[in-house]
Image 1: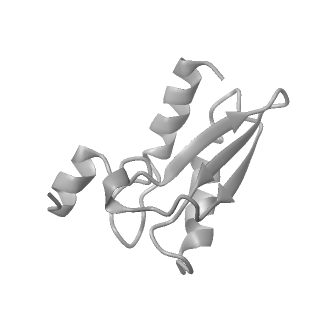
Image 2: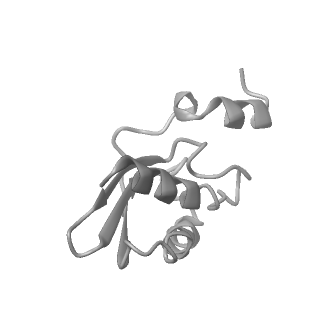
Length: 102
């Protein structure tokens, strides 16, 4: 996948807000990898802030909806992983400022 398409997808994913924290999944550092195969199937490898997150299915649905208007993406699979575990260090400077974290 070329860099401009990856940036476009990441931009779309910035519209997906973690409902418990109120910050998007990109700035929280939850998105680990993007892969787009030759058939247009996008695999978003990501994590959540906590195992057993009760809103996981909502976030997955929002990820799929966020990228549905990107012409190159024909289908989306969200792969939730727990390794490496998410920490506050993965957050962007913007997210840390918004949450008052140094």
